[in-house]
Length: 127
Image 1: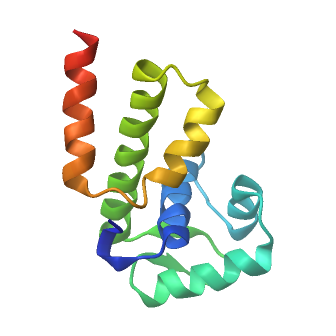
Image 2: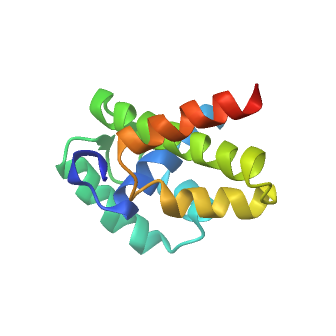
C-alpha cells in the first residue's frame, strides 16, 4: 500500500533524497538524477510535484531538503525496503544486488501490516 497515496515514483524520490542527505550536506537535482539514473528534467518535474505536496523544500537551482512529513514518509519507505531486502537475502538467499532491486519494486505494493509480519517472520527465522 502506498504511503499517503503517493506514486511509487514519488516514494522513490523521497527515499533517495533521504539516502543522499545522509551522505552529503547539500542534495541537488543533479545528485538525484545521477543517483536514480534519470534525466534532470524528470527530476525537476518530480521535485515540483513533491514541493507542491509539502514533502520537500527547494528553490530553483538550490538544495533539496525533506520537510518533516517528507522525511517521515521517506523513512517508512526505507524501512520497508530494508525489511524486504533482509527477507530476500536471509530467508530466500537471493544475491544482494538482485534483492536490493526487487525490494525496491515490492516495497510500494505491500501494506505496513504485511511488512510487519515479514519482519516478525525474519526475526523468528534467524533464531
